[in-house]
Length: 407
Image 1 (tube, rainbow, N blue to C red):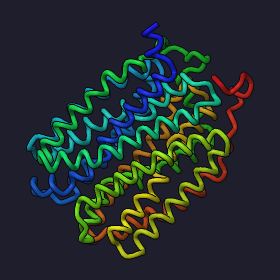
Image 2: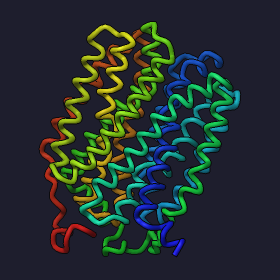
Image 3: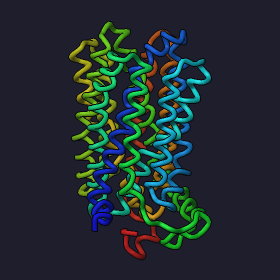
């Protein structure tokens, strides 16, 4: 009885949300380390930016494979492996080392760890545990908890850096990351098919891939998510340095990023709630348009402490509210049996965008002496993403319409 309670849908949702809070919350503060690590190591901003960009690329490249594994052996086992890699990466980031070693620890190990501990894996387990009519809301709730983790971890990370320096702060964060291990227990799903065997719904992996890759909506959704990745990684990594260049203290950047996480609790919750009632593609269109307006007003108006806080609030409404809607569309279009794998492919596009957002931000700054070009690119891409989501039809594939959309 106790074991069944620990693996109930509510337990899966609660622990999945806490895993997201830790995994995404720890990562959300990496931008605070850009200046101190770069200064102590004698690097330009491009080295740190490249390491975080590579982290996002590794995370995205590995995601379809960790998703495929989670669909076959259960999300919990994949989360355990991801947590171990994440902890190792944080510990190694804290050690004095050259640029290559830092890139391998922050880029490769943490990137692989994130691929095993974030929303494509967690949402797969949550979706399989929930009835179809509750999936969108459940993903919104899980993502809201994850966003609250981002809010809590930002001032926590800043306080650790103030008290222990950037190296000691990374060691402390690695200890927090280890809490993911016990939280993974309810997500130890009892799945049993081998990757070489047909999935439980009769589809092989190859058939599931061909079905998704032959669907125009899948491609449009992925391209839109590319823009999401570009924007959130560029802002998370470079906003602290951008505000410092404008003469604002690090505490302001910390507050702005924390506000993004706090307000996004509401943004992701309502995105999940409304995604169960209204058209998900249309909601995504409005989110990307909202981002374009928020960024444009921020960079075109004078930069002050209060304008930065206002940006944190408005951007927070749209920050990760794309995630439950995007993943909900994947589940609605193709079903949940292969959801972690297919959502992982969409997320790969997100992380390619994240790689470019993180790296290009540093590259353009070092070449041009400002972030103006990168901000302009973020605005233009947001408008493109809004247009990409307009033609997507929220209709299950023929295979699911024949048997019902809950499989």
